[in-house]
Length: 330
Ligand SMILES: Cc1cc2nc3c(=O)[nH]c(=O)nc-3n(C[C@H](O)[C@H](O)[C@H](O)COP(=O)(O)OP(=O)(O)OC[C@H]3O[C@@H](n4cnc5c(N)ncnc54)[C@H](O)[C@@H]3O)c2cc1C
Image (cartoon, rainbow, N blue to C red; front, side):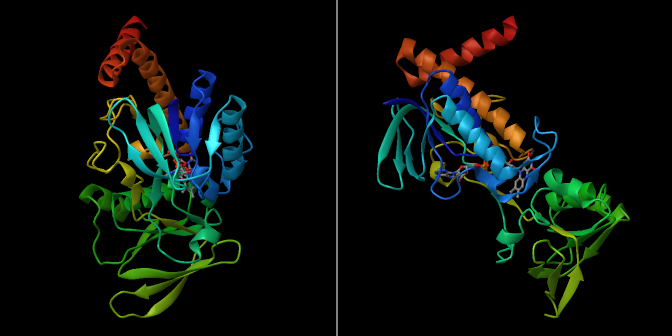
């Protein structure tokens, strides 16, 4: 049986692997069969990950993280986890190929998925004028004309934030009223750079290698018209990838995995969670990486305590008490 299995190959999973491998825990990382490297594989330049003053391409950053994890002895399996047994001292991980891996501790770092519009142009234009993250990409749209799709709080927040850069921000919404809270609506309405396009659905995104416009269908009349744009932000929701742990780990009202305070401890001893799957707010590569660090350190303390007690619940308590003591002594 292994000490530790990490599920997920985004910034959270690879960072947890770097720490666990350097602690001589010989982690096994299950990377998925198709989406190896996580969400940054879908973007171009990353300008806000510290250490890369000239920016780095998303896939290059993830390759470097993987190489760093492997350098210290992380074993990587290119398969999907399809089932988990988390109770008790032996955690079992079933893979898509039918194999089963066992470990004393699990770090769950499966990320989250931004909801898509469901258009074929989304994949090729992602990172080429089409984005799901204003914090990440707003800076690229100085003095441009862009649009945000959505009608909730995050759409209003993104639109308002984007007016720092863009000259004009359209908000495209399917209905004639918003779901967003009153205060967020008011902020957006008061902003003179924002213009609402009501009862409109994006039916196509145009552009060869860079977004240059969209087709909009009027949801009342059915009429279709074009809108010239330099960029499009989609803000219609985000789903943490938790389907494997439904009924096994406690979730929050936002649908993320519940962890204990600033730790990565889930509701089951020996199971730790990190990255966007626990984070309804920040969802950045560097916060996911930091969260992966926390999970590796928590798992390391848990495994050390498990050697003394031989009971997952007692080990969790002992590790928690040791962490609290360390905090007081610091
Ligand atoms: C287009 C785009 C651009 C972005 N740009 C930036 C940016 O410039 N700067 C920034 O800081 N952030 C950016 N972000 C956000 C950033 O990518 C995420 O916050 C970060 O990747 C989250 O890391 P994570 O490790 O939690 O999850 P993810 O990166 O989502 O990785 C999760 C991994 O788990 C794997 N997985 C899921 N289920 C299973 C399973 N059952 N079995 C095995 N593996 C599984 C997935 O395949 C994936 O590899 C961007 C996001 C997007 C979508």
